[in-house]
Amino acid sequence: MRTADALAGGFPDLSGMRLARQAHRQRWLAVAAILVVLAAIGRAFANGQIEWSYVSRFLTAKVILEGIVNTMVMALLAMALGIVLGVVVAVMRLSPNPVLKSVAAGYTWLFRGTPLILQLLLWFNLALIFPTIGIPGLWSARAVDVMTPFLSALLGLGINQGAYTSEVMRAGMLSVDVGQYEAAQAIGMGRLQALRRIILPQAMRVVIPPLGNEFIGMVKATSLASVIQYPELLHNAENIYYANSRVIELLIVAGLWYLLVVSILTPLQMLLERRFARGSQQIAR
Amino acid sequence: MTRLSFSVGFAALLGFTTAQAAELPETIKQAGVLRLTVNSTYAPMEYRDPATNELVGLDIDLANEIAKRLGVKIVWSETPFAELIPSLQTKRADFIISGISDRSSRRESADFVDYLTTGPQFFVLTENEAKAAIDLCGKKVGTTRSTSFPVEIEKWSKQNCEASSKPAVQYVPGENSIDVRNQLKQGRIDAAVQGSETLPYAQSQEAGKYRVVGEPFSTGYQGIMFRKDDAALREVVTQHLAAMIADGSYKAVLDKYGLGANAVPQPLMNAATQ
Image 1 (cartoon, chains in turn green, blue):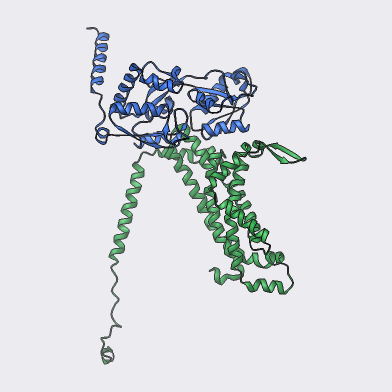
Image 2 (tube, one colour):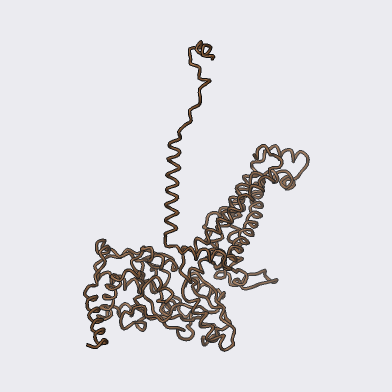
């Protein structure tokens, strides 16, 4: 026993004592309360006016599966269009040329300033303004034949997305240290070459998380295209419940699919982040 | 007393007692308020007056008259057409009077008191070549996708086009009647379908723009929808509607919208055959 040593300092020796375990009473209480609430919600849904057999029957119905394919095709294409536009507009925005700069700012202002659903309806009904569209002397067609629900949705979603993506891209480019621009200039690179080789690759690391965010938003925004008759997931689920009146059941079916898609996309985004962070593992971690 | 005469007598007695007993459910009487939900995109049945943004229309006038006789006020709310039935089921609405057709498929969850004859009607832009409905075989025909019209078009096409080995009608979905007429104007569709009761109004709004093709291709009724378990409310509304038909106030409302020809002789319960 070394009690004597300890007491010499005027304090009791606690080194031999066991640590008392904390009771965590509040923690257990909180867990219990949450479990009760979850159980109540679960029970309410199980006993609610939901015909679960309809949910399982329509979960893999052909129309629903076609809807999810159309949703994903539209989300990918519109996002691709949005990213291309976003990069171009961001580069224009950071250009020293005042014309390019103000056109880029005007684009962002216009397409970020009006609701997406309004833009979709405008594209879809473009033929009310221009019955025929084309290139004078070369080619022309009826606007309704060009502006199919697919193209209207792609242009509406993609161009709107471009306005948001341009800001993400601009943030990415601004995040690259100004010394990098100067170094590129010092070894004789032009502005665009420096952007392509030095700036954008480094900006990618920063823009991937917000772009992933935007893409997940896009997957769900495609549902707005249901009002212009693009046969995506929600549109097709609605068509079924217009016929059989099983509103909640079909909305659950669509909701489950959206959740599944987003659940798959989240780890994909992490893989992408890791790839673009190869040069700077420290920070990425 | 024979069995038949007994049951007739019993039915008469029953009819008599329910006629006496029909009274407004206590909750509505207490609140003094009827909560009604409409889809206001279906002029002239229910729409927002462009000048005043007031909710107006044939259904609105009928409902107001019924409410006046019941001595209650109406609190209106609006919803997309497809959400009308859920609104009734979730009791957001006490009953639905919103240009909705009585159809057997909808009677699973509700009872209809039919108050107006209706039928799907083909129409085209005036300059279109189609003279008779049969000319529309193989053509693109649009209608509101949340209604019963897509099914009726398909059925008509089977019976008329495919039966005489003509190409089937190509159905093109639209979001509501205004959207459908927009697609007609843009040439995305060749013809459109709406309830016959809405076409005189559409034609009056855009004079000379549209031409109806043929007659309504099936006959049905528009009905006031009640929850199955809400017989008391259904009874009392039916009685007042019958009284309105008898004293001419019903006819006056219909005439105001040029739809006197769509009148029913008396309120009918779940009378549509479709």
